[in-house]
Image (cartoon, rainbow, N blue to C red; front, side, top):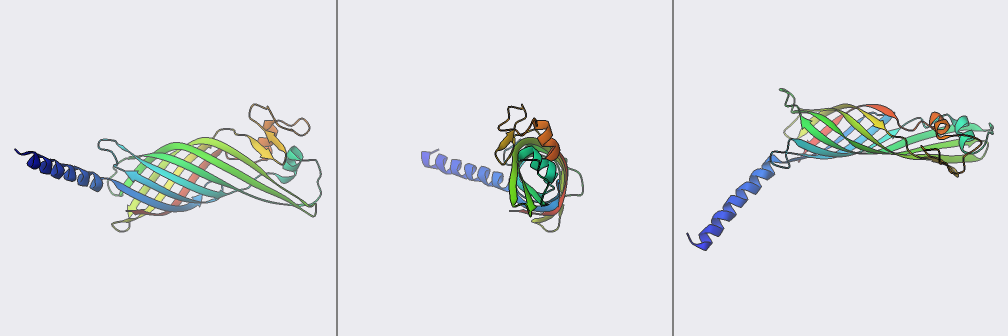
Length: 222
């Protein structure tokens, strides 16, 4: 067989292999809304069947959640002073970055039922205002965590699926910073007020700890 014929045969085989891999691989995106510590919206990008013989898919997501940031007057005392004047107004939210491995249970009926699990990174911000006292400050925290759950896809069309997810996320302690004070999990604190400790700060600032999750929305397969 000539060198040219061998090259043509190899090109054909390579093309078939690449085409089969492309057909097997599925990329998808989803937009879900629900509850995770408060009202939440999550956007995700994922891929399944991206490596021959590898049983797991992967999904990357970003979740925004609104939540109660904490008890305003104790927070003020722990981070600034023990004044009690002014009418408190509070707001809080988290940005949650996640990576999940997906395993399809291959249950008959739904398009897919995935078990998922993976790491989390939560960025917490709580805003505390004291109307009439001319005082406002943010409390922030960064925490690592882990999560797991189930995600079901139910076909609406060839590319669009109704998606329902339920799970549970847990987070490790992280530094809690507000005004000019930082409380650390090991109590190597920066400018702590009075004799307050990390435990005192964690008790009055509602940073994520254990969060059940329930969300529903749509997924689109490319």
